[in-house]
Image 1 (cartoon, rainbow, N blue to C red):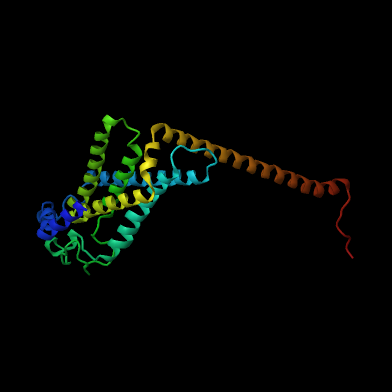
Image 2 (cartoon, one colour):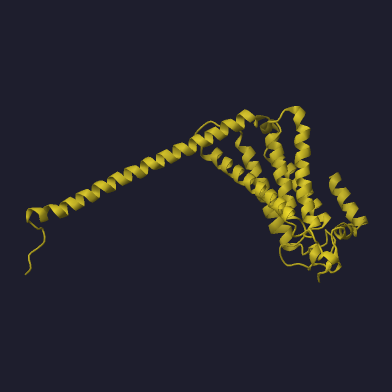
Length: 280
């Protein structure tokens, strides 16, 4: 709640802060937001987005495995349910389907101050300056924050206590870099990325109470994760083996049917007899 109040007051008292920060990266002589097409930054952005997608796939697979596996698993299924809920309700529903599609805030590169034709609007003002995929809030900053939260929860009891501070620093740096890329490329205002992070943090806290993570998180250890990954691999190989055996059985049956059919067709011909009726 304090973070909410600080952000609300900051951008209420300093409404031009967004413009001032974006102007730091806008140079008309270099084509505007000159870092937008920088290949190194593009590669960094792609790496961040790919890492989030990989995390989504991993959590989805582990969540499905916890539902259908007959083996005793060590990581509580609610952990994966929490992860999927945060991903779906956060970056996808709240951010992309909710705010970005309806808030109407134009991106920095689209407003008059930076060579565009749209009007600047404060972060919490619903506007009509954009029709879809708008600026408030940043989807990539929300995804980075969501990914950092989930990785932090999964690894908190995996790393040694003395290494947890380093883990936090690394995850915070990851989110800061992902958010900064959107600002310096002219795709989002400072308030867009800050509110994306705060909203995801608030949602994560609320869902943690719903899923009662307090008792479940200590069970997410290195041994538990490794054990469940091995169980997943065993279930996959077992399913593939069963599938191959079933396919093999079908092929053997089909082979016998074909041989019988061919034999019944060829045998009368070789013996000079035919089951076909004579012409009348």
